[in-house]
Image 1: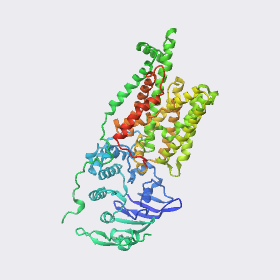
Image 2 (image 1 turned 90 degrees about the vertical axis):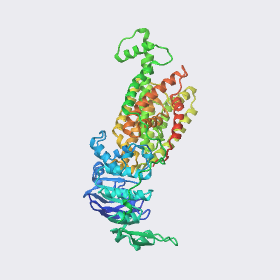
Image 3 (image 1 turned 180 degrees about the vertical axis):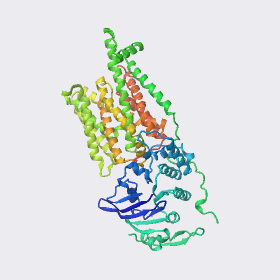
Image 4 (image 1 turned 30 degrees about the vertical axis):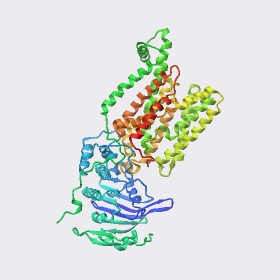
Length: 261
Length: 369
């Protein structure tokens, strides 16, 4: 399912956190949102998964205005991994994944065979079936993230929105998480900090700075040295991956602290 | 061509105990636990009616209970014994069950609502608001025209007023946020407590101050059948709503953004929970005063037994709370008989050590945003 964001604006207390952002992700595409800290990535994504109501502009999922859909219908189309995964209570992995079935169940409904199958499938899909009876709080960061992705997959969405899914993970788990997301075949919109990960995995990259989209396109076309200097304030060299030829970036150590806008 | 890095098979997941070091779940099968509690509840009620200072035999107690249930006849010389068993003790045990069930369920709801494992029904400041009204009646004889209803009416109305105040202060344009709710409730708690303390201080009659103190610590000594229907209605309605919302509570416990992504409107749910918690707490506090620790301890004990899933916790917690409070109330009557301990003293005596054990066993995070 396509996702189209049109002229989306978020204003709080007079500040424009997101300024007329227009971007899209086609069916099955993995689309990255990159930008410096505070550039508005998370705010934009919060509007997409409806934790925040935009001041103006629309989010369309499969052509329908997402904020006009019922919350349940919305959650059947789009699943999200927000950054707020602070769990205070010791749910088991199976219970957390089962929450993904909520949009498909009535409030008092018992889990059906279909629900259980989807949960098992989702846990298998992320290679976490053996964790099902573990307490979520006992898991490592990488395991937790895989479980949360399983919850999103159990939701059977058409679109997946991720806010920095690789934060705090070691490199092996970063690559693993993005491979999982890629392997889901869903339309994915994800904020990413690591530009090299973005360059490796994304079909399309949108660069956001000061709440505005400043560049969009294939990683090779977008992540230019000029743009990296201007948006991130870093000097970068573009190199080809020795095996795959994919674009990778090498960064110079700062001699003096570059002026940031 | 060599394998690119993302095709190297990931290492098998390392088991990690880093996290917050909570123990792996150890659980009792739910049907066994529920069956046990469903059996324990009527047994406890009978014990509540049978145990006490007056030395009635169990045969007599059961006969009076049967007479009370079926409307059967009793001899004229048995009236006072019948009154003790049916009117005084059983109504009291029933009310203990209702109050225990209500406080436990609301404790579960409030902990999920403010996403803080240390919250209890009183963290919203509503019980201390109720105390202001109750003490106005106990000490200054306010609302005298309402007779026996004066105390519970005053307590309930002032609980609702306190709720409105907390709501108005805690509300932001983003709705009710957990931390603001806890902070506002706590501040109000101290404010209302100061008013109550001043009233006790200013009381002219020593006996009034004593009953005010009894009420602050919680007591079921004022129980009678007349106070049962309203409390029961409020608690049952609250339980129904919470049962209906159990899966949404799970989502809310995961965080507002996650809840939103799962199709739950966290702002609306928190408003519903706030209303239900305030109404049930108000109704319960109106008949029993502020009985502490039940609403904090029972939810935790139940989570340890059945896990965190609210669909199970909300089945077990009300039953467990009901049985617990019946027995705590029995103890409060018999330990120093014929004198009576405030029930709040006993729940604290039992609750504080449990609480400390719990704190040492699990490391909690505070703040819970």
